[in-house]
Length: 364
Image 1 (cartoon, rainbow, N blue to C red):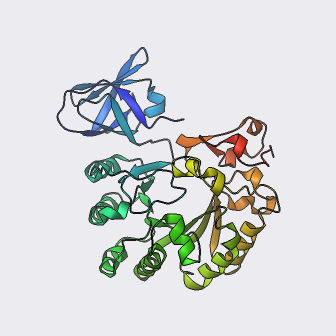
Image 2 (cartoon, rainbow, N blue to C red):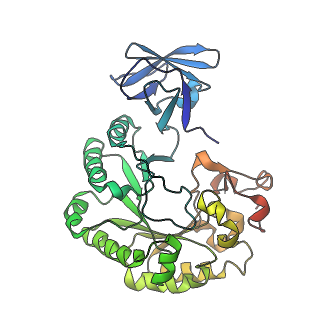
Image 3 (cartoon, rainbow, N blue to C red):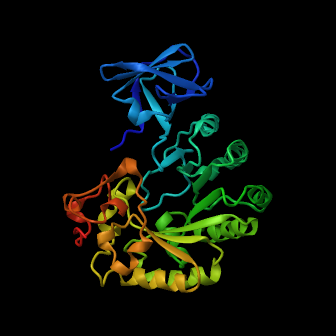
């Protein structure tokens, strides 16, 4: 996997430092830039405002223009933004008020406010970068989130954000703030797992979650926000996908896109894999997904298939399956070596269990 942390020699500083790693030919260096000096074996050496910054196993070609967070006394630095990657995400919090059956990152109780560092990182980000904000549940810290968005968008008019939220915490009082955020700069990713309220509530393990979600979606709609509705395809809900599609076209037709997603085998998803994973690779198994996709597209709503390897999708639907698995947790199987679609395929999650996964994996 691509490392999201870098080994560093601890710096003699009492404060966290956000810095950008500049290469040997960098021009217009700023006060928050660490300038490359050279290599010492497997160590890349930088000058960080007079401090020696030493990164291990991080050749300059792999980290140039990355934005990192160096913490006092620690021997690892967080890669907040990888300049060469389209997959950058800020983890806002690990707290969450739901316990979804397939959660890939089960919640934790502790929380550290990272917004001050995210603000600095955005200022140093490459041009036109697309940054994800995730959790846990980011809107548990809604005031900080809104302030960050307003300031970041004002400072960097070229940067866009994709925010994952369970949609449990938007209020009528948020409409004005949401409306003030340029809608082409933020896409809100919100989950809906069933049109049946009790079934959705059971999947997220929170009574009343469905009704609260409907309220939040209405608030987002009134503010003009762009919404990506997300549905993980699982055994408990696959038979309801067509009915859910009809529900979407009548109850939430204002969404920008409906994303049907394959399960990730980590966290609670790994624990519950055998009861949740739905293998859509046989053509007959894909039928309920196809019907649901066809229904919403016929009503003018875009539908996409996230995390679906192309070989598991019938040919006529492969154009709807973009390469969505983040590069740092993506891998390919032996069968992918001779596949002609590998460069445009999501591939598989690093932790995909090939002996308990899709039966239809084959090179195309």
